[in-house]
Image (cartoon, rainbow, N blue to C red; front, side, top):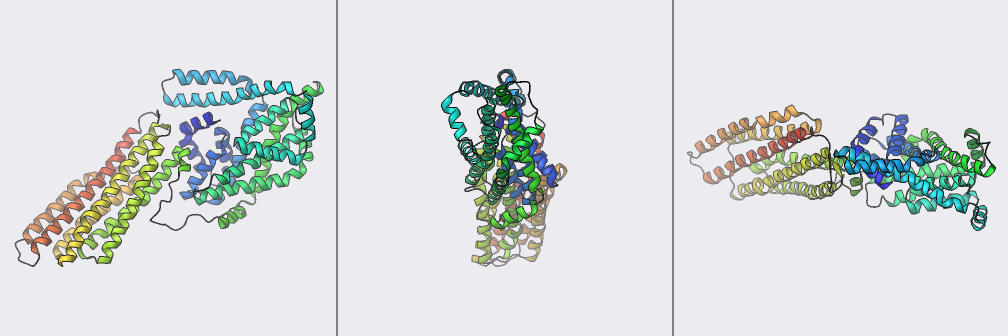
Length: 541
């Protein structure tokens, strides 16, 4: 299952993310999306990571996430249906085809699909091995007597819970139950009880896995716990009636001997019970999505205030899903970019007329930029060590460059412009109105081009980036006009004349350096756009 899930996450992660984002407009499509994604990758944790990433990014609400989680429970029954249909007979064929694809195919995209097929084949083949190995025990008196004595609903729920908590996979538990049923070793009622327990088991794991993670992760885990636990608590009292209904809707093999008939019918009945239980549970909670979301939101408040001293979106849980990790890193970079915007916007006023308090406030703001940079680089470094497709590698390389250039802009403002601001205050150097007017023109153009680059990246506007790059001539012209103006003012005799010239010249120089770094950010994005035309390849860590 790990092989299957990891391969599918890498090769189809972006598509699954896009698929999920498009189908959360209403509760019915959200359930469908959650079921499809979990059914494909056979891991509700992958779906949960996608959900948490979307909630923290503000792309979906807690209400929308409830439908996805309900659908994820339905998706976990896909493996049970495959095994019940005895697809495991083709497990070795899948293993062989997947292995040959991994060994001989050159295209990495195909290699990943082959690895996924290899993992699925191993799952199915292991079911056949377990079926063959347990067959000899179905007439073993000690085991038969023990199963009869343990054949109680609450004991079955407890066993299902414990097994799932140990193996950390409800799909694995369900598969094992179906194998035992195929050997006629358990009854349908006891099998349903084990299935109920396997639905509660992941809840403990989900809650424990949220320690140290975003509030949105705990919200998603709590929704999972409430839905599964309450669902089992309601249905467990009606196991006999539920079992009768499952027997009625499932195919029968009346021509077989009693023991063989039981072995033939039980796997299909348990798979149907698993699917029907999760579908019924989803429909039951469908009308309570909004109240459930409100309860969870009150119990576990999400992230609201923008604490500039800490990162908000970076968490190692997202590394399990590289496409989501990249999105979260971009969100943190955008926060960093917003602080840099504030630095640029206030820098001219502070350097030319700012007070001691304003200088300190701007230096503190630059510290928040520094606080972003280190964690972003560390997070991207860890993400780059995962198996990635070529486009994801390009995205990470691009983000490294953008984060570094943003940090460089902050350094220019703190180390250079603020040093000049302190010198101006210490010497009492005035800035003339005519010089201030020209500096303002240059400063406004630098800020406009910076904002244009950030907005163009967010909205994928290549034409705007090209305009900013072409504005190099305009910035050079404004800087030349300022240099000529400052040189002419040297002729006029006034107090602190040389100090004023030095400070004003350095302001011009540093604003031009900021624009140069802004253009480099634009060029990084444009070069990445060209690189993305290359077919996807997987890059090994």
